[in-house]
Amino acid sequence: MESAYERYPTGPNKPHGAGTVGRLLKGRDVFQLVTLSRTTVWRRVREGTFPAPVSLGTTRIAWRESDIAAWMAAQKLTTEGVPLDHDGH
Image (cartoon, rainbow, N blue to C red; front, side, top):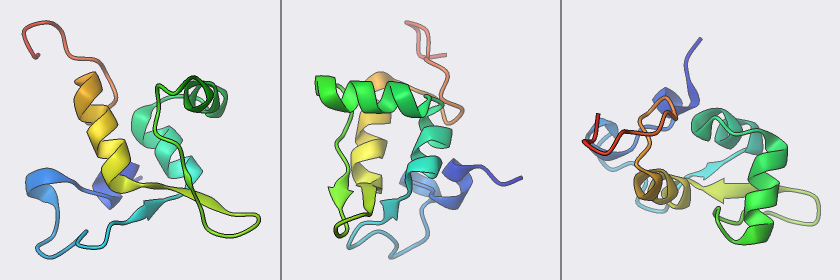
C-alpha cells in the first residue's frame, strides 16, 4: 500500500510545479504521515504544538501540506515518522 508520504511528496521528490498553491491533506492522511493517533494530534493542536487545520466549510477541515512538512522538519522526523537520533540517523 502506498504511504501518505509517497502520495504527498515534499522536497526533492515533489513533482515539478506541484504545490505552488499548496495541497491540503485529509485527517487520515495526516495521522498516517506523522504516525500519531487522532487523539494525540488533536491534543497537540489544542496545546499549540501541532499545526491547526484550515476550515473548508461548515463540516470539513484539512491540513496544509506545507504546515505538516514544516512540523515534521522541526521534529526531525524521518519519512516513517521515527525521530532521528542526535547525530541525524
